[in-house]
Length: 119
Length: 208
Image 1 (cartoon, chains in turn green, red):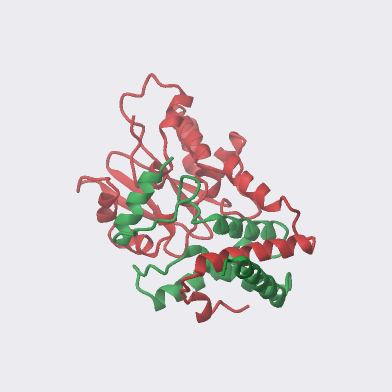
Image 2 (tube, chains in turn yellow, blue):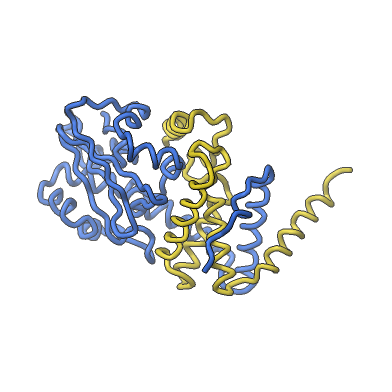
């Protein structure tokens, strides 16, 4: 609905970005994984594993930390990478999942992908 | 609880692939453990797509334009106005607890931002666009709103006062835009179609 507008806004405000993340016709979500990361946090909060306010406070601290260490126009900025970091911190902190299980599954995913790549 | 450290913020060229793998792993393990069902993620996303979105804000604005009493209620108690139209006012703490509306007028233009992170009135405007979360936007909109609005294509006369409303965990602001001229003959439904999320954020005006 407002893809052109958002592209214009992002380009203007960030001084130009050649590869704007765009999925489903708009930029609300940077990618499929960011959409899923968002939903996981909401669902865990809905189930009472943590309060959204707690999540929000951690986001604020994490964003502030990132901004203190990077320039405002640093292209490595990724809101949903910070979102995932906060989400993981809560998931492991509350013992909802074990970090080692997640690490192992991610490693297996990469191993599978690498194995299936043509040599 | 620790705040994620430096290693989280290091920028890997494979970040997209790594993030996707990590999120998929989190979802798979949560399903495996019985915390989620296989449709949990889709249900949440569907809720935000169909129940909480800018279509709600547009309905509220259109009604406020044709009903002065409702307009006063919207300004005084936004959540009560949402309830009157049977709209969601929040979802388990999902950003809609206390919404407030700032009314535009010929002499005052309102702009919403969140300097802390990306607080946003989800029930009435949906999820924030990408640029709302951008550090540059968040910093500059607070410091030099007139210039930023100009870059958005909204040139405001110097005589118009710009008020910037910084949302927080306590209050989520959004804007009641001005009804455009020449819309007297339009129905409430037709008016609602004119209203964009940008107008309700204050980075645009409603156009016919």
